[in-house]
Each structure stands twice: as structure tokens, then as C-alpha cells.
Amino acid sequence: MTPPPARSGSAPSGGNPWLVAIAVMLATFMEVLDTSIAAVALPYIAGSLSATNDEATWVLTSYLVANAIILPASSWFSLRFGRKRFLITCIVIFTISSFACGSSTSLAMILIARAVQGAGGGALQPLSQSILLETFPPQKRGFAMAVFALGVVVAPVLGPTLGGWLTDTYSWRWAFYINIPVGAFAIFMISRYVVDPPYIKDAHPGKFDGIGLGLLAVWLGALQIILDKGQEDDWFGATWIRWAAAILLTSFVSFLIREFRHKQPLVDLRVFRHRNFAIGCLLIGLFGAGIYALVTLLPLFYQELMGYTALAAGWAVSPRGIGAIVAMPIIGYLTAKIDNRWLIAFGFSMFGAASLWFGEVNLSIGQWTFLWAILISGFGSGCVFVPLSTTTMAFLKNEEIGNASGLYNLLRNIGGSIGISVVNTIVTRHSQSHRNELAASVDPGRISVHGAIQGMQAYLSSQGSSSTTALRQTYGLLNVALNGQARLWSYVDDFRYMALACFGCVPIVFALKKAVRKGPAGAGH
Image 1 (cartoon, rainbow, N blue to C red):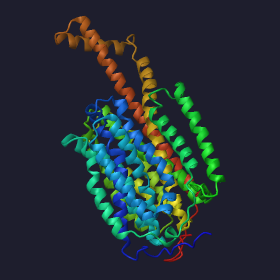
Image 2 (spheres, one colour):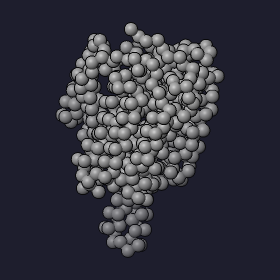
Image 3 (cartoon, one colour):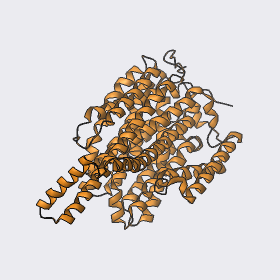
Image 4 (tube, helix red, strand yellow):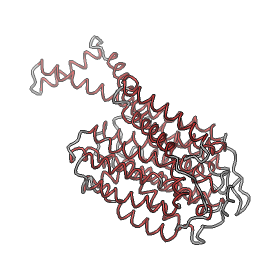
């Protein structure tokens, strides 16, 4: 029998809900930060542990795979062991494994530690979100999601900057050690202020669905490996990618059948019967693809084509965090006042406009040329995340929120992985096609091109090079220029595709049902 929903008027403990918000936000911020903070340190990790750069990328992959597996399963574990106890246990595992990552002396050791860290961190996002949604009454859930968004939206932006600074100033090991004091403080705050609601204490989740977890691990692992390594091995041109895709499809279909037919499944997929939740998951997946793609593309552009250091590139994109922080209190207030669908549509439109602005990029830009575009993208992401979270969960009972939060965050992370993979593939493939187009236009038989080549050759000859050497150097410089322009245009393509995707999300937003609030104790529908 389904227990009655807990009254949504106050924190379960009867205490200050904002202290609960701070407690769970610490855990979320720490976990999301770690998905990006290690990325800039990969070359240093590889050098320190005598590994190649390709081998070092498994430091990211092992974390993401373990993280994704635990995300949707977090609801069952919280019902079985108690949400507060499970949350504290996850933070303890995350913090201890962070120390193990920082003190690793071999590639195998850090990969094992990162997998354990990812498993410990996988439950932090959905548990934090479900605690916040249940702690605050419906009319104040916008503020709750604004606090949660500080961790989910701002942390990926600060990660590269903080990681670059710690790596350059101290050592890559401090990118992991920094979690230790944050984790300890989060444990103290959660143990003091977070209390399980009655339906958690009285829950009987049933026997553990080990087969479901196994199938979940297989298809998520196969998906993440394909996305991470597909571009390197020419996607389906590689035999192992085709086999991995077959395993992915088989295990995914088997997982769906298992979860729909099992009496007490590990992940309750029936929550997708709610229209708002199903459409909201689609939108958060697309949003995750957009924001993670942008977080990846801009620093890569600054480092690859502009020659910036990791720290300088991190500083260049850091204003996005300011834009998101500015948006949070404004959007948190407006979510209780106006139709959230308009806020979400406005956020996607702002993000799309910023992407179009980035599409005007060239090789003459300065570090702060796109300051306003970066601020706008941050503000737009805040406009999307906060009202989308509240609207997606508006028609769910409290007992459904924990399971739904796991699936919702999983789809955002999967969207992010797909987005990163797609934009990296576009950069690589379009660079090749643009290089061919530009090379075809640079015909030495054309008078203007021939004159330019002769002029450069004459200049190099005047600097002491022989005629043959000067000609070879001229063609070398021309090749560098062609490659740079081709790479630039591939980034332009990426930014414009992202803009189209964002604008395409706007009509989907209005397929959501409007969440009407009926007073302090209303259920939000």
C-alpha cells in the first residue's frame, strides 16, 4: 500500500529549511565540481603516473560510468538503508576515495579510486534534490531549486578554473584533496539538520534487484565508453564499437523489460507516465548536452587556437558562473509568480542567442571579447534549470520524487556526455571538410595566390633563407594558416548548431502542463 504523502509545508525536522539546503548543496557542489575539475589536470596526471594522455582519459571515464550506474539506483538504497544514513555513507566514500585519488602512485590505483569516488558521488545529486523538494513547500520550491542549481550549474563552470589554478600553483593532487574539508563539513551539516520523512522510515523496498543493476551497469558503461572513445576510433568504422553498440542495445532493451515486469524494480520507470516528467527529462537531457558542450568548447577553443593556458582559459569562461549566480535569486522568486514555461522558454532563447554570438568568433578576439555572451549564457542556464526542475516534479507525490530525481539527473548527465561527444566529433570532422574547401580555393595558379606566395618567399629570402628553403617555409606557413582557419570554422559550425538546438527546444517547452499552485500546502498541481 502506498503511504500518504508527507505534508509539504516545512522541513521534516521542523527546523530551518535553509540550513538543510546548505547542507545538501555542499555535497552536490562537491560532486559536480569533481566531474570537471580533473579534466584540466589530465596531462599532469599522465606525466606523473607514467601514462599516455589516452590512458589518462580513463580517469574521467571510470568516474562517469560508476556515477551514472548509481544515479538511478539511489532511490532503492535510500529506502532500504534510510536516506540520511545513505547520503552520509556516500559522502564518506566520496571523501575517502578523493584522498586515495590524490595519493595515487599508479594509473591502476587512481582508476580504481575514481570508480569508487564516482559510485559514492552518484547518489548525491538525486538525494539532495529530493530532500530539497520535500523540505520546501511548493510555492517556495523555486528558491530550493535555485540553491540546488548553484551546485549543478555553477560547479561545472568553476571546475576548470579551480582545477587549473590548483594544478599550476600546487599539484594535480590538490584537485582531489580539496574535497576532504568540504566533505567533512557536509557530513557535519547533514547529520545535524537532515531528518528522514516518515515514508522513508516505514518503507519496504523489497529484495534487491541485482539483475536490474547488472543490466543497468552494462548498458550505461557501454554507452559511456562509446561516447568517450568513438571519435578516436572512427565510430562505427571500428569493429569493437559495433560490438559495444550491440551490447548496449541488447542490455538496454533487457533492462527495460526487467524493470517494467518486476514487481519491485530497482528503478521504477512507470514514473514516465506523468507527461511533465517525461517531457522534462527530454528537455533536461537537451539542456545538459548544451551546457556541457559549451563548457567543453570554449576553453578548448581558447587553448587550441588562441594559445591560452588552462588557467587563462578557465578565467575567460568563468563569468558564466556569475551570470548563473545572478539568475538564481531572480528566477527563484519568479517561479512562484508566473508560468514557469515562459521562464524556461526565455532561458533556452537566451542560451541560443549566446551561442549565435559565439558563432561570430575569430582569431583576433581578446580574453574578454565574449564577456557579455558568457554572462548571458550563464543567466540563461539559470532560467532553464530552476523552473524546469520544479515543473518536471510538480505532479509527483513525495514518495515518487526520490526515484524521479535519480532518473532526471541521469538523463541530464547522459545528455551532457552525448553533447560533449557530438561537439568534439563536429570539430574534428568539419575541420577536415573545411580544410579541403579552403585548400581548393588556394590555387597557386590564381594570380592573387601566386603573388602572395611570391611576396612571402621574397620576404623570407630577405631574412637569410635560400630560395628553396623560403619556398618550403612559405608553403608551411600557408598550411598552418589553412589548418587554423578550418579549425575555426568547425567551432563556428558547432556554436551555430547549438543555437539551433536551443531554439528548437522552445516549442517543446509548451508541451509541459502548467503547474498551478493552490496554497501553502498544495501539491503543486
